Image 1 (cartoon, one colour):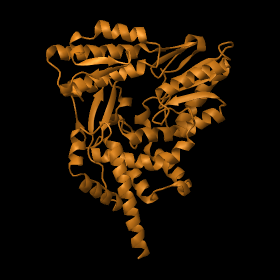
Image 2: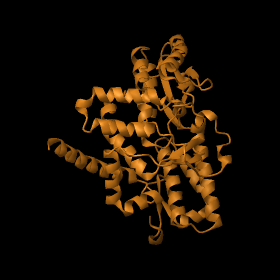
Image 3: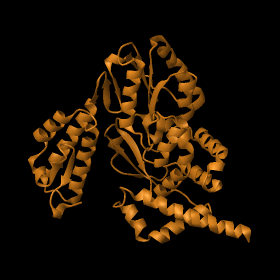
Image 4: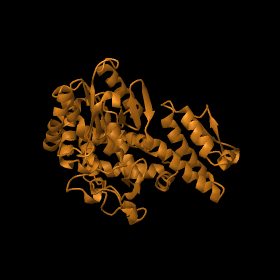
Length: 402
């Protein structure tokens, strides 16, 4: 009788947690076909998913695979909506356990962090290390070759399992169920049975090291999954602590596979490169990218996370400006061909505001003004206007309200 009661309580909690995971998953995805289909019979679908999880019969469904070109060429696997719910469930359960173990300067997929925080921290590191630009310091920027495609799943699984077992006293979940879901998600091969969106030509120019279709056995995580971002932080967590503690690099920051080391001793920083290469290969089965090793004096500036950080000032990177211009040209072509419908206007607002959101963190007022008023088609001003200076585009008119 006691075991039955325990199961009922567990089921109730799992159901509540699953509904929360659903609400998290539907943010910015509510109008997609899969999300609408799931929402149509919401309670029945959530209860069915809970039953599969509780009975351990859950199986991930086929993903949709496509290639994006901006900001760089990448292969994306979009999971089925119900699998996205499971990803959020896993994240909600284990993120509070792993978050305190991460160093402060790991910036990816963390609340209150992100690219802008990372840029500010690297700028702060350079100022501190150089004593406000009064003495020499050097910047070493490194990258891991095909990071997401090279991660060893067995090694990652053991890291997750060991950490969770050691922190069960902090866990607010049923360990056997969560580790089962992690195993199902982690060892699922999204290339099997996936639906290809686009043409084969889309993959031209994409290096094999950036495609799951060319990944080594038991290696590779799909870019596009929430769990992949969290797992990426877990995989490199020991490395982060090793750099700071064993190498003694006080000024260090990492965003996914892109990391920066800053030190006043030029020769010591150079000597760290082969040591880091050996550690990555031996401990994590990763390869340091041979052509993405940048070493320079701080006065030369460092390009990081879409910005160029120089003494007393930070610029937006040319690639970001170029992408903004290309996106604007694409939207200009669309509006010249036909009057925009609701979805076209929504895409325009999303794209423009995304770039304006990035640029407003830098001294780019004159640049934004020149780009928008010189290059944006006049037709768009019939449907949208700028708000708060040159900060954000807003839809114009009730008939086009989003």
